[in-house]
Length: 161
Image (cartoon, rainbow, N blue to C red; front, top):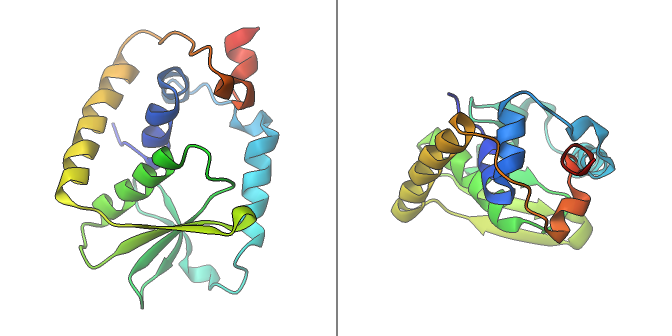
């Protein structure tokens, strides 16, 4: 199984969402929040070279890569669930396997930036996440979270109707 940034993000957000996504049940296209995030991604930082945007590295698509300064940029809609966004970017750094690169999460609406590095402890954590992702995906569908964050989830109707 090719583990992507979405797998990492969903593992840290909701195991049920990870399981559904991994079994080709995709509800993201119905979400206004996802649509808003795509607009922010497409309209922010418009001076960046198109050739260096949306670079597919197998484990996901890097929003923008600055080869000169060795920075991988990820644009996010908000700082909600920042931990999953951080590990999503750390997966990209792990995949590149080039210690000269760092990451930068940019949140234009909040005017926030988070500098991300990948260390040995992060690599071990990611490898443990890979094991957990496989366990979740190969197991039975996890129970609903019944959390406040469920209200904003694109899978809400699937889980609660």
